[in-house]
Image (cartoon, rainbow, N blue to C red; front, side, top):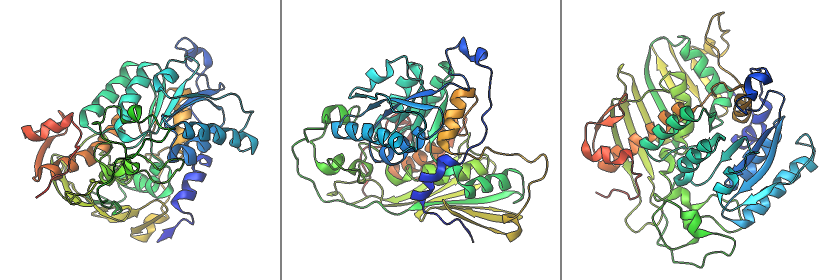
Length: 439
């Protein structure tokens, strides 16, 4: 196997160094629309200041040339304070160019969106808030980088696509997987026919979710606005494992509860399915058949997302697609060879595919960090590598599998109209799965 000597954590930290020249448009072509020019700073607000924003989004965006943070927003005041410290630290250490200026703090994201001096926002909240905030941001005239998975329902994804078009906003799924060499090379090989006709895809994610015993009601920490945190989710008593550990950036409990997310099936799935859909040119379509099997925790478990799953999809052209819990990778098999890719390594058969030199005229893809791609497109107004339509279809693949598992049967789906041939399944097109299914 060809290995890249870095961990996923190190990959994230280094991703912003992978840059390419943006398409530069004259300032006068953008001025009438009030868009930032190629030499202007891009002013940003960060909505959601948890572990992903603290460890990755703030450092990588602030270090990107021309980015100026102006505001942060969170319902946890401790996290707000830590976010501002994190931004200042980047300037004090010299990792961010320029000088630190005042960063305002907000509990209400609508107040941040109301500012006319903010060009773009990075949204990294619990999943149940993603689509709502992104829609509000685009309506407010902000370009949007949105943490994956970008939605919890098919209809939410359709609304994001429509809003990006209506308000002429730049949208970027904040997923770093396409910024790695393995996924990028797989897309280059497969899209240009070096594997021949693609016959089969296998995409896998870690089997890492676990059950949790019943949890007691607890006092709400003084720094947390719990009512605001719950937002559109069903009301439930506060307990630590429902939200996040106070004054900590540990893995939060909400990531394992169906009130707030779908679990690993959409979480890491929006990395691995993402890369495979990109490579096979399925990123703007969907399957015609879905057959999912999965295991939820027992009835007494507080955490209730799927522990394991195995979903088989069939696309209209006959492509077979398996998505399951195992370890993070995807493998694409064609009649002339196969390619394996994960976050840091790749393999192929024949081995010559690993050293192949693309021919003149081959389709090429941008190779840069997700942060740089977003900022470049905010300036140029060209489409990002993962716009709303792509993010919607990638997230939908996981959602479709989850719906099949939740209903306990094979489903037929029309990927053009985006409807099932099943009324009970169609009820989930605009309703998130919030309870598990028990035999």
